[in-house]
Length: 566
Image 1 (cartoon, one colour):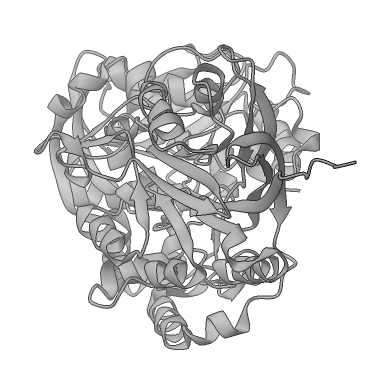
Image 2 (tube, rainbow, N blue to C red):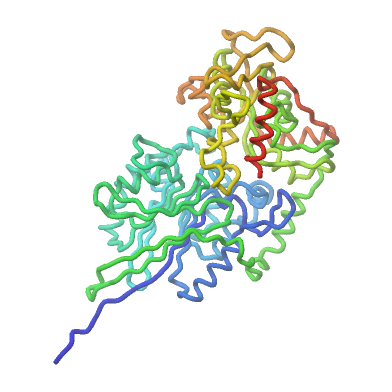
């Protein structure tokens, strides 16, 4: 009796995503001058081990953007050493990345930086929804193809389309960002049919978002794409720094898509383990996909990998340990959540001095940062001011200023009904959250306070009714009908956080018409100059605003601070 021979072939491989690395290339925190938890070097250890187990060509690496801004290691090779091959590109090339995408923070570094970085990368940087308006064609590559032992893989890349809402146009000049769902609907069939991909992967610098999301040009659109675009096997997302490992059922095909997000700062990787069964004709008969988010903080840094970058590490550390001046008292962001604080008010003072504006808006850009008393180094400036924002001056009416502050404090504080209530808008499940910043309902970098005016914030009032502006800082009357010059950072001036749009009520397309001045330097450079000019600083709170009732606020601040920072 003759038995039919089983000619099916099983092919196993893994795809690993990094996302929102934010300059964590080395296992060292240059900002706080101490060993760091994440890093590309730890990921390198993990990837080398997996490749040794599975085979070199059976572990594919993709990066999902926001890798060029965060730690000073990125800043140094963005703006200080601009002639060497970019450190980040060298590392990713050595690790053998298949492809990458651009994130909003990569674009915030400016054309000269991210264009140079892309030129240095030995792999395609993807962006199927980014169009060069000068040429009416894609600015980035739409997708790449790879084959693993007969299995054809297509990887589509996209970028959040909301970049024009946050960043000055000079940073993304001549680029047009398209909707992610519409782009995926157009390109996925090409990958699946024309390129004959057995596995279709989407890598998108966009957050997870919500089930059943509607509307165009969403910032967090992973669920929306997975639910509305058929034939996607794995969707890697990022941008929102929130770990995700979930299955979504497509509303058209009824098939399932795996969504993965590794979080931020190179502490985790997202891994899709894929097994494809091919028939004798080479066509896919069956697929199995399992997703994991793997904590790599316990991995030993790859010493061989790091040995190739000893000089670069030393150059960066020499830069970050430069002493700029001295600080007479400790500064921290914790106090900024509960009243006028020396930390944020130091930013206010510099914004007003540099711009000549009447009023300043600023927020604690780092959730929990501290600058010790003593010498101030370049690294401390990254704690003082986290991002490479420019300074803008806009024309706003008194009423728009009040409404702006109502929106800010409305996403910052809740309405207290009793002295025992919380004052901060905390997430309902804050006790189950491990990342402290996720204990708040909204991002703290959108909690803008003001300088140049005196005002109170009544915690007993609902959103939209909390703010009473008493006067200008010098005691002169504040007029709701008058136009004032207001200093704020470039992210906020372009609509970031929604305070100008939802709060002040200015349509997105009219924001630029309100801008009357922009700085030629980033805010961190103005901080450096101010500290260097005085050599010693002693920042104090302006005490120009306060929460009321003060007794309620003081007790609530003590309770909520324990929750936020424990």
